[in-house]
Length: 332
Image 1 (cartoon, rainbow, N blue to C red):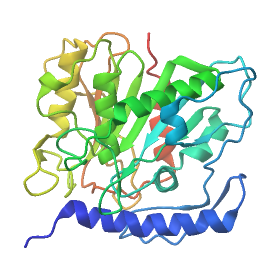
Image 2: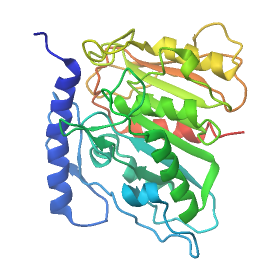
Image 3: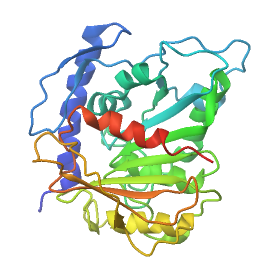
């Protein structure tokens, strides 16, 4: 039987999740600290020894009790120490890949550290657990619920509403950042909750192959980031597992969003300023392209990682680069 690349990815992420969990247990503190957790270059993960996964601030007073969806399925959050009630604060929801957790994904992306530095609220939700014991999101038919029917759109909407009730969230700056299965989920939320979501960053995900299933009522800024040598979620499109419905490629995904957003450009064109985001690839390996003629709040952009894998070994510029992009793309 041929090797299943998604299960290979799952095993890799599971090993990293165990490492992160042990570090979190040992840390026992809400104070961020840096340090190498010993992830190998082959695994493609850089873990911090002091991931912040608990509330570091104080909710605004006099607000409603949490709704039933969030009470039944709680989530972790990071509130910057600089948070001030009444001051509109950006919100970023980080969506992990299949088998990972919010804590593991944060250890890879390093967004909790940035939340304190830049002053944004970070939500670290976990998907539900499948019969194999792996966390997943019910995103699109391509990845990765495998027939399960949990309504993650409703739950993530409730997560955002819960944070809006307890903190002064800037309604123009609510973003989702996802990897792999979490990136598929970010696209799903952009399709189904476009009135709520200002923008998404998708690393190695895709929108619905059947574009009729994506019906946004408002414009959404979309940044697709994808490695050209991704063996799990293929850059040019394919199936994540044998027998699974196909997903569109990275360029098709961005073209779909350009059409949904009403962009007038006919094709992706270079916007220059190639980026050096991956530590084990030479020079500025990430090309930036976008569709032109997009309305305000409707960017359709691609960051193509030449030679990039499914789990790129990001350098220190990754987190700030994606956050800078998000902050430049609020709702109008």
